Length: 171
Image 1 (cartoon, rainbow, N blue to C red):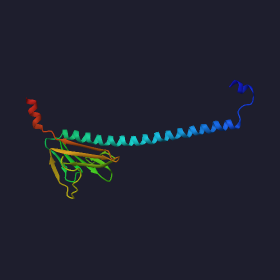
Image 2: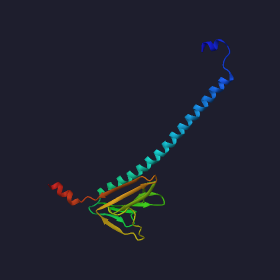
Image 3: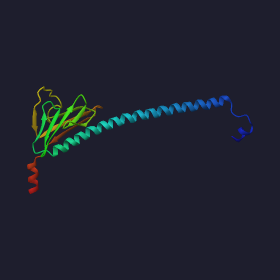
Image 4: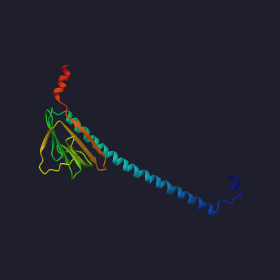
Protein backbone atom coordinates (compact mmCIF):
# COMPACT_ATOMS: atom_id res chain seq x y z
CA UNK A 1 0.00 0.00 0.00
CA UNK A 2 2.82 2.40 0.91
CA UNK A 3 4.51 1.59 -2.40
CA UNK A 4 1.32 2.44 -4.29
CA UNK A 5 1.09 5.85 -2.64
CA UNK A 6 4.77 6.69 -3.08
CA UNK A 7 4.93 5.97 -6.81
CA UNK A 8 2.28 8.60 -7.58
CA UNK A 9 0.43 6.52 -10.15
CA UNK A 10 -2.79 6.08 -8.10
CA UNK A 11 -5.67 3.86 -9.23
CA UNK A 12 -6.75 3.33 -12.80
CA UNK A 13 -10.29 3.86 -13.97
CA UNK A 14 -10.73 0.10 -14.50
CA UNK A 15 -9.77 -0.61 -10.87
CA UNK A 16 -12.22 2.01 -9.58
CA UNK A 17 -15.03 0.60 -11.76
CA UNK A 18 -14.28 -2.95 -10.60
CA UNK A 19 -14.53 -1.90 -6.95
CA UNK A 20 -17.74 0.01 -7.72
CA UNK A 21 -19.34 -2.99 -9.50
CA UNK A 22 -18.40 -5.37 -6.67
CA UNK A 23 -19.88 -2.90 -4.16
CA UNK A 24 -23.14 -2.64 -6.12
CA UNK A 25 -23.44 -6.44 -6.34
CA UNK A 26 -22.92 -6.78 -2.58
CA UNK A 27 -25.49 -4.02 -1.96
CA UNK A 28 -28.08 -5.73 -4.21
CA UNK A 29 -27.58 -9.05 -2.41
CA UNK A 30 -27.95 -7.39 1.00
CA UNK A 31 -31.13 -5.60 -0.11
CA UNK A 32 -32.63 -8.92 -1.23
CA UNK A 33 -31.83 -10.54 2.10
CA UNK A 34 -33.30 -7.62 4.09
CA UNK A 35 -36.47 -7.61 1.95
CA UNK A 36 -36.90 -11.36 2.44
CA UNK A 37 -36.49 -10.99 6.21
CA UNK A 38 -39.09 -8.20 6.31
CA UNK A 39 -41.65 -10.28 4.36
CA UNK A 40 -41.11 -13.27 6.66
CA UNK A 41 -41.46 -11.03 9.73
CA UNK A 42 -44.78 -9.60 8.50
CA UNK A 43 -46.14 -13.07 7.71
CA UNK A 44 -45.14 -14.50 11.09
CA UNK A 45 -46.47 -11.45 12.94
CA UNK A 46 -49.83 -11.84 11.22
CA UNK A 47 -50.02 -15.56 12.01
CA UNK A 48 -49.01 -14.95 15.63
CA UNK A 49 -51.66 -12.23 15.96
CA UNK A 50 -54.33 -14.52 14.55
CA UNK A 51 -53.27 -17.34 16.88
CA UNK A 52 -53.46 -14.92 19.82
CA UNK A 53 -57.00 -13.93 18.82
CA UNK A 54 -58.06 -17.60 18.72
CA UNK A 55 -56.51 -18.59 22.03
CA UNK A 56 -57.71 -15.43 23.78
CA UNK A 57 -61.31 -16.07 22.72
CA UNK A 58 -61.09 -19.73 23.80
CA UNK A 59 -59.66 -18.75 27.21
CA UNK A 60 -62.33 -16.12 27.85
CA UNK A 61 -65.13 -18.52 26.83
CA UNK A 62 -63.68 -21.30 29.00
CA UNK A 63 -63.39 -18.94 31.98
CA UNK A 64 -67.02 -17.89 31.59
CA UNK A 65 -68.13 -21.52 31.31
CA UNK A 66 -66.28 -22.31 34.55
CA UNK A 67 -68.24 -19.49 36.25
CA UNK A 68 -71.58 -20.76 34.90
CA UNK A 69 -74.40 -21.85 37.13
CA UNK A 70 -74.41 -25.65 37.03
CA UNK A 71 -75.98 -26.91 33.80
CA UNK A 72 -76.84 -23.47 32.45
CA UNK A 73 -74.99 -23.36 29.15
CA UNK A 74 -76.84 -23.30 25.83
CA UNK A 75 -75.57 -23.57 22.27
CA UNK A 76 -77.53 -22.52 19.22
CA UNK A 77 -78.57 -25.10 16.68
CA UNK A 78 -76.74 -23.16 13.95
CA UNK A 79 -73.50 -23.31 15.95
CA UNK A 80 -72.83 -19.57 15.82
CA UNK A 81 -73.83 -18.56 19.33
CA UNK A 82 -73.41 -19.62 22.92
CA UNK A 83 -75.20 -18.47 26.08
CA UNK A 84 -73.81 -18.91 29.57
CA UNK A 85 -75.94 -18.28 32.64
CA UNK A 86 -73.87 -16.98 35.55
CA UNK A 87 -75.08 -16.10 39.02
CA UNK A 88 -75.48 -12.39 38.26
CA UNK A 89 -75.74 -12.25 34.44
CA UNK A 90 -76.14 -14.11 31.18
CA UNK A 91 -73.19 -13.89 28.80
CA UNK A 92 -73.84 -14.28 25.09
CA UNK A 93 -71.21 -15.09 22.47
CA UNK A 94 -72.03 -14.66 18.80
CA UNK A 95 -70.01 -15.01 15.58
CA UNK A 96 -70.55 -11.97 13.38
CA UNK A 97 -69.56 -13.44 10.02
CA UNK A 98 -69.40 -10.30 7.82
CA UNK A 99 -67.08 -8.57 10.31
CA UNK A 100 -65.16 -11.80 11.03
CA UNK A 101 -65.45 -11.19 14.79
CA UNK A 102 -66.59 -13.06 17.87
CA UNK A 103 -68.75 -10.81 20.01
CA UNK A 104 -69.32 -11.07 23.74
CA UNK A 105 -72.59 -9.39 24.75
CA UNK A 106 -72.52 -7.37 21.52
CA UNK A 107 -68.93 -6.13 21.98
CA UNK A 108 -66.16 -7.49 19.70
CA UNK A 109 -63.97 -9.95 21.59
CA UNK A 110 -61.75 -11.35 18.80
CA UNK A 111 -61.19 -10.31 15.22
CA UNK A 112 -59.76 -12.00 12.11
CA UNK A 113 -61.82 -15.14 12.73
CA UNK A 114 -62.77 -17.16 9.66
CA UNK A 115 -65.10 -19.57 11.45
CA UNK A 116 -66.49 -19.93 14.98
CA UNK A 117 -68.64 -22.86 15.91
CA UNK A 118 -70.03 -24.51 19.01
CA UNK A 119 -71.49 -27.99 18.63
CA UNK A 120 -72.14 -31.19 20.48
CA UNK A 121 -68.91 -33.18 21.00
CA UNK A 122 -69.85 -35.94 18.54
CA UNK A 123 -71.14 -33.61 15.82
CA UNK A 124 -69.18 -32.29 12.90
CA UNK A 125 -68.46 -28.61 13.73
CA UNK A 126 -70.81 -26.17 12.02
CA UNK A 127 -72.53 -28.87 9.99
CA UNK A 128 -75.96 -27.78 11.20
CA UNK A 129 -77.07 -24.93 8.98
CA UNK A 130 -80.61 -24.50 10.23
CA UNK A 131 -82.67 -21.43 9.43
CA UNK A 132 -84.47 -21.52 12.77
CA UNK A 133 -82.24 -20.88 15.75
CA UNK A 134 -82.96 -23.04 18.78
CA UNK A 135 -80.97 -23.04 22.01
CA UNK A 136 -79.94 -26.45 23.33
CA UNK A 137 -78.91 -26.84 26.96
CA UNK A 138 -75.68 -28.85 27.17
CA UNK A 139 -73.25 -30.21 29.75
CA UNK A 140 -70.43 -30.55 27.21
CA UNK A 141 -69.69 -28.91 23.87
CA UNK A 142 -67.03 -28.65 21.18
CA UNK A 143 -65.58 -25.21 20.51
CA UNK A 144 -63.99 -24.69 17.08
CA UNK A 145 -62.28 -21.46 16.04
CA UNK A 146 -60.49 -21.05 12.70
CA UNK A 147 -58.45 -17.91 12.03
CA UNK A 148 -58.07 -16.15 8.68
CA UNK A 149 -54.67 -17.86 8.33
CA UNK A 150 -56.51 -21.24 8.57
CA UNK A 151 -55.09 -22.16 11.98
CA UNK A 152 -57.66 -24.32 13.72
CA UNK A 153 -58.28 -24.41 17.46
CA UNK A 154 -60.66 -27.12 18.61
CA UNK A 155 -61.43 -28.18 22.16
CA UNK A 156 -64.15 -29.93 24.11
CA UNK A 157 -65.38 -28.02 27.15
CA UNK A 158 -67.21 -29.83 29.94
CA UNK A 159 -69.42 -27.86 32.30
CA UNK A 160 -68.51 -28.62 35.90
CA UNK A 161 -71.30 -29.73 38.18
CA UNK A 162 -71.67 -27.77 41.42
CA UNK A 163 -73.03 -30.84 43.25
CA UNK A 164 -69.75 -32.75 42.84
CA UNK A 165 -67.75 -29.80 44.19
CA UNK A 166 -69.88 -29.65 47.34
CA UNK A 167 -69.48 -33.40 47.92
CA UNK A 168 -65.70 -33.15 47.53
CA UNK A 169 -65.53 -30.38 50.13
CA UNK A 170 -67.52 -32.34 52.74
CA UNK A 171 -65.34 -35.47 52.51
